[in-house]
Image 1 (cartoon, rainbow, N blue to C red):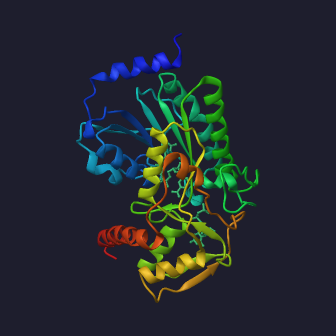
Image 2: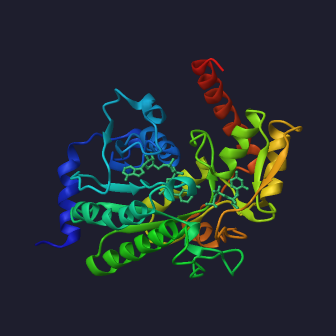
Image 3: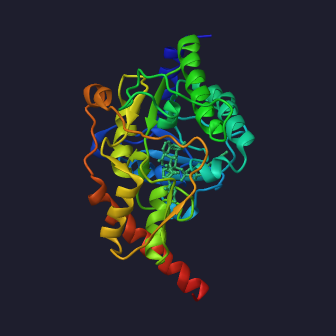
Length: 342
Ligand code: NAD
Ligand code: UDP
């Protein structure tokens, strides 16, 4: 067999038929698994804007057709309903792999499937890699578990409970990183690894249980904001357009990673509740609920590596980004209530 590089060149040449995209750049064929989800659909928008040919593979477990409806009918866009634990053969240049239940409520729903899907993904997708496609894995800040180092740099190995209720996600993503690196070292496959920190924005699932979507939906519905535990635990919230920019720079760049992609602005959950009150309803009540098991106490990315090697840093603060998400939620909740007659 020829080397991977030769195969890659052959592959690219075969696709020489594809037209020149916007900005005079060669159009690429790109798969986005999970492209009908929250982050995936924003990524698809940007890739389409750049004139690429995009194939979305999604089983709609948490994603929605509405998120990509505006691309239907565009000859550069294709939507395939497919579960990524099953093999699929596609001839492409790049794979952004996002398909995975991302909210704790969803990934705990079927924990065994969550972890198995991380392992299986590599079997079908690495058969594509042999054609030279570059594979970007969306890993997570959860690989740091309940971190003993603060802020978390990529050199930190984490503090994860291997047998807890969150382990299917944390250990699944850690295993996915391991497999990606083993395929990279052993088979010379081109991989990129992003460790994504808490991200919010328009198109998030309204009732997916994550804190920003919960608080925003609760404030809009005039329900109390549910703060788990004492509310002193921290997270760092990134607006989705910053993440998408980071993912694309990582895919196009020469560095494998892993790279932290997150906004270092750190908030306690009580502070987040306050920002939501200021943005939506100063009279919104706060209700304390017991916290979930193994909840990380604090989380904040050290983004020096992404800054230095990808020239990336977030530009949208929580106070700037939240209103954009609120108008999307307001519109969807209003549309829902019109439908239900509520
Ligand atoms: P999301 O739930 O909105 O999107 C996930 C998408 O994957 C959905 O469209 C869902 O239908 C699809 N999907 C799930 N399982 C699938 C399967 N077996 N086959 C095909 N499609 C499947 O979540 P998101 O927030 O957009 O997250 C996208 C990726 O980013 C995930 O891999 C997640 O782990 C990672 N991530 C997200 C965050 C965040 O804060 N949003 C943080 C860290 C990591
Ligand atoms: N949380 C909360 N109220 C909610 C949902 C979540 O206080 O209604 C807390 C949760 O306990 C955690 C933080 O918010 O400490 C972030 O939770 P999320 O599920 O959004 O993300 P992750 O835990 O995966 O970072």
